[in-house]
Length: 493
Image 1 (cartoon, rainbow, N blue to C red):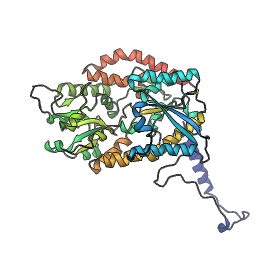
Image 2: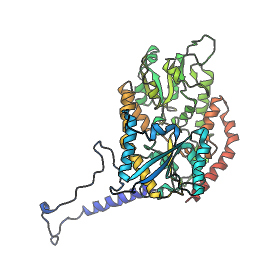
Image 3: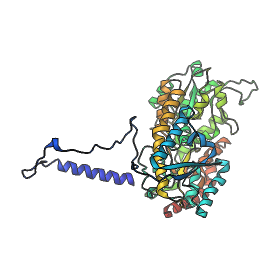
Image 4: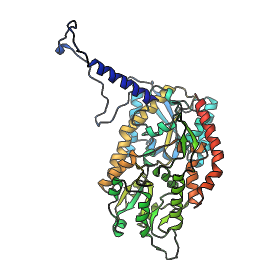
Protein backbone atom coordinates (compact mmCIF):
# COMPACT_ATOMS: atom_id res chain seq x y z
CA UNK A 1 0.00 0.00 0.00
CA UNK A 2 2.81 2.41 0.91
CA UNK A 3 4.52 1.68 -2.40
CA UNK A 4 1.22 2.17 -4.26
CA UNK A 5 0.58 5.55 -2.62
CA UNK A 6 4.18 6.60 -3.27
CA UNK A 7 3.81 5.65 -6.91
CA UNK A 8 0.63 7.74 -7.23
CA UNK A 9 2.31 10.75 -5.65
CA UNK A 10 5.33 10.34 -7.89
CA UNK A 11 3.15 10.18 -11.01
CA UNK A 12 1.25 13.27 -9.88
CA UNK A 13 4.49 15.13 -9.29
CA UNK A 14 5.86 14.16 -12.68
CA UNK A 15 2.62 15.15 -14.36
CA UNK A 16 2.74 18.51 -12.61
CA UNK A 17 6.32 19.08 -13.73
CA UNK A 18 5.44 18.16 -17.30
CA UNK A 19 2.49 20.57 -17.26
CA UNK A 20 4.72 23.34 -16.00
CA UNK A 21 7.07 22.67 -18.85
CA UNK A 22 4.37 23.61 -21.38
CA UNK A 23 4.37 27.28 -20.29
CA UNK A 24 7.22 29.83 -20.37
CA UNK A 25 9.01 29.94 -17.06
CA UNK A 26 9.27 33.74 -17.15
CA UNK A 27 6.59 36.34 -18.00
CA UNK A 28 7.07 40.11 -18.53
CA UNK A 29 5.78 40.73 -15.00
CA UNK A 30 8.13 38.19 -13.38
CA UNK A 31 11.13 39.80 -11.69
CA UNK A 32 14.50 38.37 -12.61
CA UNK A 33 17.29 37.62 -10.20
CA UNK A 34 21.02 37.61 -10.40
CA UNK A 35 21.86 33.88 -10.27
CA UNK A 36 25.29 34.61 -8.85
CA UNK A 37 23.72 36.25 -5.82
CA UNK A 38 21.50 33.31 -4.96
CA UNK A 39 22.87 30.93 -2.34
CA UNK A 40 21.33 27.53 -1.69
CA UNK A 41 21.99 25.05 1.06
CA UNK A 42 24.07 22.06 0.06
CA UNK A 43 21.85 18.99 -0.33
CA UNK A 44 22.11 16.42 2.41
CA UNK A 45 24.12 13.34 1.51
CA UNK A 46 21.99 10.34 0.62
CA UNK A 47 24.85 7.82 0.34
CA UNK A 48 28.02 7.16 2.28
CA UNK A 49 31.55 7.25 0.87
CA UNK A 50 31.23 3.66 -0.30
CA UNK A 51 28.01 4.29 -2.19
CA UNK A 52 25.64 2.68 0.35
CA UNK A 53 22.32 4.38 1.02
CA UNK A 54 21.99 6.26 4.29
CA UNK A 55 18.95 6.07 6.54
CA UNK A 56 16.84 9.12 7.34
CA UNK A 57 17.08 9.04 11.15
CA UNK A 58 17.58 12.71 12.13
CA UNK A 59 21.16 13.56 13.05
CA UNK A 60 20.08 15.13 16.34
CA UNK A 61 18.31 11.98 17.58
CA UNK A 62 19.45 11.40 21.16
CA UNK A 63 17.80 9.15 23.73
CA UNK A 64 20.04 10.40 26.53
CA UNK A 65 21.96 7.23 27.28
CA UNK A 66 18.86 5.01 27.54
CA UNK A 67 19.53 1.29 27.79
CA UNK A 68 18.10 -0.59 24.81
CA UNK A 69 17.37 -4.14 25.99
CA UNK A 70 17.49 -6.62 23.10
CA UNK A 71 16.50 -10.27 23.58
CA UNK A 72 18.54 -12.58 21.34
CA UNK A 73 19.27 -16.29 20.97
CA UNK A 74 22.43 -17.54 22.67
CA UNK A 75 23.41 -19.65 19.66
CA UNK A 76 23.89 -16.59 17.43
CA UNK A 77 24.94 -14.04 20.05
CA UNK A 78 28.60 -13.77 19.06
CA UNK A 79 28.14 -14.47 15.34
CA UNK A 80 25.39 -11.94 14.63
CA UNK A 81 24.99 -9.50 17.48
CA UNK A 82 28.03 -8.64 19.56
CA UNK A 83 31.62 -9.33 20.49
CA UNK A 84 33.12 -7.81 23.61
CA UNK A 85 35.98 -6.17 21.73
CA UNK A 86 37.67 -6.06 18.36
CA UNK A 87 39.54 -9.28 17.59
CA UNK A 88 41.06 -8.60 14.17
CA UNK A 89 38.57 -10.96 12.50
CA UNK A 90 36.79 -8.92 9.84
CA UNK A 91 33.30 -10.11 10.84
CA UNK A 92 33.88 -9.67 14.58
CA UNK A 93 35.21 -6.18 14.01
CA UNK A 94 32.27 -5.29 11.77
CA UNK A 95 29.81 -6.38 14.49
CA UNK A 96 31.69 -4.40 17.13
CA UNK A 97 31.89 -1.26 14.99
CA UNK A 98 28.22 -1.47 13.99
CA UNK A 99 27.10 -1.59 17.62
CA UNK A 100 29.38 1.28 18.57
CA UNK A 101 27.99 3.37 15.71
CA UNK A 102 24.38 2.69 16.73
CA UNK A 103 25.10 3.68 20.32
CA UNK A 104 26.87 6.89 19.31
CA UNK A 105 24.27 7.91 16.73
CA UNK A 106 21.25 7.40 18.98
CA UNK A 107 22.62 8.05 22.46
CA UNK A 108 21.75 4.57 23.69
CA UNK A 109 23.51 1.67 25.34
CA UNK A 110 22.84 -1.68 23.70
CA UNK A 111 22.20 -4.44 26.24
CA UNK A 112 21.98 -7.85 24.55
CA UNK A 113 20.11 -10.36 26.69
CA UNK A 114 20.71 -13.86 25.39
CA UNK A 115 18.87 -17.06 26.18
CA UNK A 116 18.46 -20.44 24.48
CA UNK A 117 15.94 -20.00 21.69
CA UNK A 118 16.40 -22.59 18.95
CA UNK A 119 13.65 -24.99 17.91
CA UNK A 120 13.97 -27.19 21.00
CA UNK A 121 13.80 -24.15 23.30
CA UNK A 122 11.16 -22.21 21.38
CA UNK A 123 8.43 -22.49 24.03
CA UNK A 124 10.66 -21.08 26.76
CA UNK A 125 11.92 -18.26 24.53
CA UNK A 126 8.41 -17.34 23.38
CA UNK A 127 7.28 -17.65 26.99
CA UNK A 128 9.82 -15.06 28.13
CA UNK A 129 8.32 -12.52 25.71
CA UNK A 130 4.75 -13.53 26.59
CA UNK A 131 5.40 -13.27 30.33
CA UNK A 132 7.00 -9.86 29.93
CA UNK A 133 3.96 -8.57 28.05
CA UNK A 134 1.53 -10.00 30.60
CA UNK A 135 3.55 -8.49 33.44
CA UNK A 136 3.92 -5.20 31.55
CA UNK A 137 7.48 -5.00 32.85
CA UNK A 138 9.13 -3.66 29.69
CA UNK A 139 11.88 -6.26 30.01
CA UNK A 140 12.67 -6.18 26.29
CA UNK A 141 12.74 -3.19 23.97
CA UNK A 142 13.41 -5.37 20.95
CA UNK A 143 13.38 -9.11 20.33
CA UNK A 144 15.30 -11.13 17.72
CA UNK A 145 13.42 -14.41 17.43
CA UNK A 146 13.82 -17.63 15.44
CA UNK A 147 12.06 -16.63 12.25
CA UNK A 148 9.43 -19.37 12.13
CA UNK A 149 8.24 -18.52 15.67
CA UNK A 150 7.10 -14.95 15.05
CA UNK A 151 3.70 -15.97 13.68
CA UNK A 152 2.89 -17.53 17.06
CA UNK A 153 3.64 -14.30 18.94
CA UNK A 154 1.86 -12.23 16.29
CA UNK A 155 -1.40 -14.16 16.45
CA UNK A 156 -1.42 -13.93 20.25
CA UNK A 157 -1.51 -10.15 19.87
CA UNK A 158 1.78 -9.61 21.69
CA UNK A 159 3.51 -7.47 19.08
CA UNK A 160 3.32 -3.87 17.85
CA UNK A 161 2.28 -3.17 14.28
CA UNK A 162 5.63 -1.92 13.01
CA UNK A 163 4.02 0.13 10.27
CA UNK A 164 2.74 2.54 12.97
CA UNK A 165 6.24 3.59 14.04
CA UNK A 166 7.87 6.63 12.45
CA UNK A 167 11.54 5.68 12.35
CA UNK A 168 11.04 2.44 10.39
CA UNK A 169 11.17 2.66 6.59
CA UNK A 170 10.52 -0.70 4.97
CA UNK A 171 11.16 0.60 1.47
CA UNK A 172 14.87 0.78 2.29
CA UNK A 173 17.24 -1.93 1.00
CA UNK A 174 18.24 -3.19 4.45
CA UNK A 175 14.78 -4.78 4.79
CA UNK A 176 13.88 -7.95 2.90
CA UNK A 177 11.17 -6.56 0.66
CA UNK A 178 10.02 -9.96 -0.53
CA UNK A 179 9.36 -10.92 3.07
CA UNK A 180 7.49 -7.70 3.78
CA UNK A 181 5.31 -7.93 0.69
CA UNK A 182 4.21 -11.41 1.72
CA UNK A 183 3.64 -10.74 5.43
CA UNK A 184 1.77 -7.44 5.54
CA UNK A 185 -2.00 -7.92 5.87
CA UNK A 186 -4.06 -4.73 5.54
CA UNK A 187 -0.75 -2.85 5.77
CA UNK A 188 -0.13 -4.33 9.22
CA UNK A 189 3.27 -5.84 9.82
CA UNK A 190 4.44 -7.41 13.07
CA UNK A 191 7.90 -8.86 12.35
CA UNK A 192 10.65 -8.18 9.85
CA UNK A 193 14.11 -9.28 8.82
CA UNK A 194 16.88 -8.30 6.48
CA UNK A 195 20.45 -7.11 6.94
CA UNK A 196 19.87 -6.90 10.70
CA UNK A 197 20.16 -10.70 10.69
CA UNK A 198 23.44 -11.96 9.25
CA UNK A 199 21.87 -15.41 9.58
CA UNK A 200 19.50 -14.54 6.75
CA UNK A 201 22.45 -14.40 4.35
CA UNK A 202 24.26 -17.35 5.94
CA UNK A 203 21.13 -19.48 5.61
CA UNK A 204 20.59 -18.91 1.89
CA UNK A 205 20.51 -22.35 0.30
CA UNK A 206 22.74 -23.33 -2.59
CA UNK A 207 24.48 -26.32 -4.15
CA UNK A 208 28.22 -26.88 -3.94
CA UNK A 209 29.98 -29.03 -6.51
CA UNK A 210 33.37 -30.74 -6.58
CA UNK A 211 35.25 -29.40 -9.61
CA UNK A 212 37.74 -32.28 -9.70
CA UNK A 213 34.98 -34.88 -9.70
CA UNK A 214 33.08 -32.98 -12.38
CA UNK A 215 36.18 -33.02 -14.60
CA UNK A 216 36.65 -36.74 -13.92
CA UNK A 217 33.12 -37.41 -15.17
CA UNK A 218 33.41 -35.08 -18.15
CA UNK A 219 31.02 -32.51 -16.74
CA UNK A 220 31.71 -28.91 -17.63
CA UNK A 221 30.02 -25.60 -18.27
CA UNK A 222 28.08 -25.51 -14.99
CA UNK A 223 28.04 -21.73 -14.77
CA UNK A 224 27.02 -21.48 -18.42
CA UNK A 225 24.04 -23.75 -17.71
CA UNK A 226 22.94 -21.45 -14.92
CA UNK A 227 23.34 -18.33 -17.04
CA UNK A 228 21.50 -19.90 -19.96
CA UNK A 229 18.60 -20.98 -17.74
CA UNK A 230 19.10 -24.71 -18.34
CA UNK A 231 20.08 -25.60 -14.77
CA UNK A 232 17.00 -27.67 -13.88
CA UNK A 233 16.27 -30.64 -11.64
CA UNK A 234 16.30 -32.94 -14.67
CA UNK A 235 19.76 -31.66 -15.64
CA UNK A 236 21.00 -32.20 -12.08
CA UNK A 237 19.63 -35.75 -12.10
CA UNK A 238 21.26 -36.43 -15.47
CA UNK A 239 24.68 -35.20 -14.35
CA UNK A 240 24.61 -36.89 -10.95
CA UNK A 241 23.55 -40.37 -12.03
CA UNK A 242 26.95 -41.58 -13.18
CA UNK A 243 28.86 -40.68 -10.01
CA UNK A 244 27.75 -43.47 -7.67
CA UNK A 245 30.36 -45.93 -6.37
CA UNK A 246 29.85 -48.64 -3.74
CA UNK A 247 32.99 -47.74 -1.81
CA UNK A 248 32.35 -50.03 1.17
CA UNK A 249 31.50 -52.97 -1.13
CA UNK A 250 28.42 -54.00 0.81
CA UNK A 251 26.26 -54.23 -2.31
CA UNK A 252 23.83 -51.50 -1.31
CA UNK A 253 23.61 -47.75 -0.92
CA UNK A 254 25.07 -46.57 2.38
CA UNK A 255 26.46 -43.34 3.81
CA UNK A 256 30.06 -44.44 3.18
CA UNK A 257 29.60 -44.64 -0.59
CA UNK A 258 30.24 -42.02 -3.28
CA UNK A 259 27.21 -40.10 -4.51
CA UNK A 260 26.16 -37.81 -7.31
CA UNK A 261 23.95 -35.70 -5.06
CA UNK A 262 23.87 -35.61 -1.26
CA UNK A 263 21.74 -33.44 0.98
CA UNK A 264 24.04 -31.49 3.28
CA UNK A 265 21.18 -31.41 5.76
CA UNK A 266 17.76 -32.97 5.28
CA UNK A 267 16.15 -29.64 6.29
CA UNK A 268 17.33 -28.33 2.93
CA UNK A 269 14.68 -30.49 1.28
CA UNK A 270 12.19 -27.67 1.68
CA UNK A 271 14.51 -25.54 -0.45
CA UNK A 272 12.90 -27.25 -3.44
CA UNK A 273 9.56 -25.62 -2.58
CA UNK A 274 10.86 -22.21 -3.61
CA UNK A 275 13.38 -23.55 -6.11
CA UNK A 276 10.57 -25.22 -8.11
CA UNK A 277 8.17 -22.30 -7.50
CA UNK A 278 5.61 -24.62 -5.91
CA UNK A 279 2.45 -22.84 -4.82
CA UNK A 280 1.19 -23.65 -1.33
CA UNK A 281 -1.48 -21.00 -0.79
CA UNK A 282 -3.56 -19.11 -3.34
CA UNK A 283 -4.57 -15.53 -2.67
CA UNK A 284 -8.19 -14.47 -3.13
CA UNK A 285 -9.46 -11.63 -5.33
CA UNK A 286 -8.70 -9.17 -2.52
CA UNK A 287 -5.11 -10.30 -2.25
CA UNK A 288 -5.41 -12.24 1.02
CA UNK A 289 -3.57 -15.59 1.38
CA UNK A 290 -6.80 -17.56 1.61
CA UNK A 291 -6.78 -21.11 0.23
CA UNK A 292 -4.40 -24.05 0.29
CA UNK A 293 -3.62 -25.42 -3.17
CA UNK A 294 -0.94 -27.82 -1.98
CA UNK A 295 -2.39 -30.66 -4.07
CA UNK A 296 -1.98 -28.92 -7.42
CA UNK A 297 -0.41 -30.79 -10.33
CA UNK A 298 2.96 -29.05 -10.20
CA UNK A 299 3.47 -29.89 -6.51
CA UNK A 300 2.39 -33.50 -7.02
CA UNK A 301 4.73 -34.02 -9.99
CA UNK A 302 7.69 -32.31 -8.34
CA UNK A 303 7.25 -34.26 -5.12
CA UNK A 304 7.05 -37.56 -7.00
CA UNK A 305 10.20 -36.76 -8.95
CA UNK A 306 12.16 -36.17 -5.74
CA UNK A 307 10.83 -39.33 -4.08
CA UNK A 308 11.79 -41.41 -7.10
CA UNK A 309 15.29 -39.96 -7.20
CA UNK A 310 16.14 -40.33 -3.52
CA UNK A 311 14.48 -43.71 -3.02
CA UNK A 312 15.25 -45.57 -6.20
CA UNK A 313 18.53 -44.16 -7.51
CA UNK A 314 21.77 -45.04 -5.70
CA UNK A 315 23.43 -41.83 -6.86
CA UNK A 316 21.28 -39.74 -4.51
CA UNK A 317 21.48 -39.71 -0.72
CA UNK A 318 19.32 -38.07 1.94
CA UNK A 319 18.98 -39.02 5.58
CA UNK A 320 17.37 -37.41 8.59
CA UNK A 321 20.35 -38.37 10.74
CA UNK A 322 23.28 -38.04 8.30
CA UNK A 323 24.32 -34.72 6.80
CA UNK A 324 26.49 -35.15 3.70
CA UNK A 325 28.71 -32.07 4.01
CA UNK A 326 31.46 -34.13 5.73
CA UNK A 327 31.32 -36.56 2.79
CA UNK A 328 31.63 -33.60 0.43
CA UNK A 329 34.80 -32.55 2.22
CA UNK A 330 36.10 -36.11 1.72
CA UNK A 331 35.48 -35.85 -2.02
CA UNK A 332 32.70 -38.46 -1.97
CA UNK A 333 29.87 -36.22 -3.23
CA UNK A 334 29.73 -34.54 -6.63
CA UNK A 335 26.85 -32.16 -5.82
CA UNK A 336 25.99 -31.30 -2.22
CA UNK A 337 23.18 -29.04 -1.02
CA UNK A 338 24.18 -26.46 1.53
CA UNK A 339 23.91 -22.89 2.73
CA UNK A 340 26.18 -19.88 2.38
CA UNK A 341 27.34 -20.49 5.94
CA UNK A 342 28.92 -23.79 4.84
CA UNK A 343 31.68 -21.88 3.05
CA UNK A 344 33.37 -21.29 6.39
CA UNK A 345 33.53 -25.07 6.93
CA UNK A 346 34.76 -25.68 3.39
CA UNK A 347 37.40 -22.96 3.14
CA UNK A 348 40.27 -25.19 4.32
CA UNK A 349 39.59 -27.89 1.70
CA UNK A 350 42.87 -28.36 -0.13
CA UNK A 351 42.35 -31.57 -2.12
CA UNK A 352 39.98 -30.04 -4.68
CA UNK A 353 38.34 -26.79 -5.73
CA UNK A 354 34.60 -26.36 -5.41
CA UNK A 355 32.05 -24.13 -7.05
CA UNK A 356 28.63 -22.88 -5.98
CA UNK A 357 25.33 -23.03 -7.86
CA UNK A 358 21.73 -22.07 -7.11
CA UNK A 359 19.15 -24.73 -6.37
CA UNK A 360 17.85 -25.90 -9.76
CA UNK A 361 14.66 -24.72 -11.42
CA UNK A 362 11.81 -27.17 -11.97
CA UNK A 363 12.08 -26.85 -15.76
CA UNK A 364 13.35 -24.44 -18.39
CA UNK A 365 9.92 -22.85 -18.71
CA UNK A 366 10.32 -21.48 -15.18
CA UNK A 367 11.50 -17.93 -15.59
CA UNK A 368 13.76 -17.39 -12.58
CA UNK A 369 15.95 -19.19 -10.08
CA UNK A 370 14.47 -18.96 -6.61
CA UNK A 371 16.32 -19.33 -3.32
CA UNK A 372 15.17 -20.30 0.16
CA UNK A 373 16.76 -18.90 3.31
CA UNK A 374 16.67 -21.62 5.92
CA UNK A 375 14.34 -20.66 8.76
CA UNK A 376 17.13 -20.39 11.33
CA UNK A 377 17.66 -16.66 10.84
CA UNK A 378 16.38 -13.99 13.21
CA UNK A 379 13.30 -11.87 12.65
CA UNK A 380 12.67 -8.80 14.76
CA UNK A 381 9.65 -7.63 16.72
CA UNK A 382 8.69 -5.10 19.38
CA UNK A 383 6.42 -6.19 22.28
CA UNK A 384 3.23 -4.16 22.78
CA UNK A 385 4.19 -3.24 26.36
CA UNK A 386 7.56 -1.75 25.45
CA UNK A 387 8.47 1.40 27.41
CA UNK A 388 9.30 3.62 24.42
CA UNK A 389 8.15 2.24 21.05
CA UNK A 390 9.82 5.01 19.07
CA UNK A 391 13.17 4.39 20.74
CA UNK A 392 12.83 0.69 19.92
CA UNK A 393 11.97 1.56 16.33
CA UNK A 394 14.93 3.91 16.01
CA UNK A 395 17.31 1.26 17.37
CA UNK A 396 15.90 -1.36 15.00
CA UNK A 397 16.13 0.91 11.95
CA UNK A 398 19.64 2.08 12.83
CA UNK A 399 20.80 -1.44 13.67
CA UNK A 400 19.50 -2.68 10.31
CA UNK A 401 20.88 0.18 8.24
CA UNK A 402 24.31 0.06 9.87
CA UNK A 403 24.34 -3.73 9.34
CA UNK A 404 23.59 -3.07 5.66
CA UNK A 405 26.55 -0.69 5.40
CA UNK A 406 29.05 -2.39 7.72
CA UNK A 407 28.31 -6.05 8.41
CA UNK A 408 26.67 -7.41 5.25
CA UNK A 409 29.30 -6.02 2.85
CA UNK A 410 32.09 -7.35 5.06
CA UNK A 411 30.59 -10.84 5.11
CA UNK A 412 29.25 -10.97 1.57
CA UNK A 413 31.88 -9.08 -0.40
CA UNK A 414 35.06 -9.60 1.66
CA UNK A 415 34.53 -12.98 3.33
CA UNK A 416 32.05 -14.95 1.23
CA UNK A 417 33.03 -13.80 -2.26
CA UNK A 418 36.77 -13.32 -1.71
CA UNK A 419 38.03 -15.15 1.37
CA UNK A 420 35.86 -18.28 0.92
CA UNK A 421 35.40 -18.44 -2.88
CA UNK A 422 37.64 -20.46 -5.19
CA UNK A 423 36.90 -18.61 -8.46
CA UNK A 424 35.43 -15.40 -9.84
CA UNK A 425 32.45 -17.25 -11.28
CA UNK A 426 31.42 -18.42 -7.81
CA UNK A 427 31.31 -14.78 -6.73
CA UNK A 428 28.85 -14.10 -9.53
CA UNK A 429 26.78 -17.10 -8.42
CA UNK A 430 26.67 -15.77 -4.85
CA UNK A 431 25.20 -12.54 -6.24
CA UNK A 432 22.63 -14.40 -8.31
CA UNK A 433 21.57 -16.60 -5.40
CA UNK A 434 21.30 -13.67 -2.96
CA UNK A 435 19.23 -11.66 -5.43
CA UNK A 436 16.81 -14.56 -5.92
CA UNK A 437 15.97 -15.20 -2.25
CA UNK A 438 12.23 -15.77 -1.90
CA UNK A 439 9.75 -15.50 0.96
CA UNK A 440 6.12 -16.48 1.30
CA UNK A 441 3.29 -16.14 3.78
CA UNK A 442 2.96 -19.94 3.81
CA UNK A 443 6.51 -20.54 5.00
CA UNK A 444 6.80 -17.52 7.32
CA UNK A 445 3.54 -18.45 9.09
CA UNK A 446 4.14 -22.18 8.70
CA UNK A 447 4.01 -23.19 12.37
CA UNK A 448 0.62 -21.49 12.81
CA UNK A 449 -1.12 -22.96 9.77
CA UNK A 450 -0.35 -26.68 9.94
CA UNK A 451 3.36 -26.39 9.07
CA UNK A 452 3.17 -26.92 5.28
CA UNK A 453 6.89 -26.26 4.93
CA UNK A 454 7.98 -29.09 7.18
CA UNK A 455 5.16 -31.35 5.99
CA UNK A 456 6.85 -31.43 2.59
CA UNK A 457 10.25 -32.20 4.08
CA UNK A 458 9.06 -34.77 6.62
CA UNK A 459 6.87 -36.65 4.14
CA UNK A 460 9.62 -36.70 1.53
CA UNK A 461 12.25 -38.01 3.95
CA UNK A 462 10.01 -41.04 4.58
CA UNK A 463 9.77 -41.66 0.80
CA UNK A 464 5.98 -41.62 1.07
CA UNK A 465 4.97 -41.82 -2.57
CA UNK A 466 1.35 -40.75 -2.21
CA UNK A 467 1.45 -36.98 -1.72
CA UNK A 468 -2.20 -36.52 -2.74
CA UNK A 469 -3.40 -38.91 -0.04
CA UNK A 470 -1.20 -37.21 2.55
CA UNK A 471 -2.51 -33.77 1.64
CA UNK A 472 -6.13 -34.95 1.62
CA UNK A 473 -5.75 -35.93 5.28
CA UNK A 474 -3.83 -32.78 6.23
CA UNK A 475 -5.65 -30.03 4.37
CA UNK A 476 -9.05 -29.76 6.17
CA UNK A 477 -7.54 -28.98 9.57
CA UNK A 478 -4.81 -26.82 8.02
CA UNK A 479 -7.42 -24.77 6.16
CA UNK A 480 -9.22 -24.08 9.43
CA UNK A 481 -5.94 -22.86 10.94
CA UNK A 482 -5.33 -20.65 7.91
CA UNK A 483 -8.84 -19.21 8.10
CA UNK A 484 -8.41 -18.48 11.81
CA UNK A 485 -4.97 -16.91 11.31
CA UNK A 486 -6.25 -14.65 8.55
CA UNK A 487 -9.26 -13.59 10.58
CA UNK A 488 -7.00 -12.76 13.53
CA UNK A 489 -4.60 -10.76 11.37
CA UNK A 490 -7.46 -8.71 9.99
CA UNK A 491 -8.62 -7.85 13.51
CA UNK A 492 -5.24 -7.06 15.08
CA UNK A 493 -4.45 -3.37 15.66
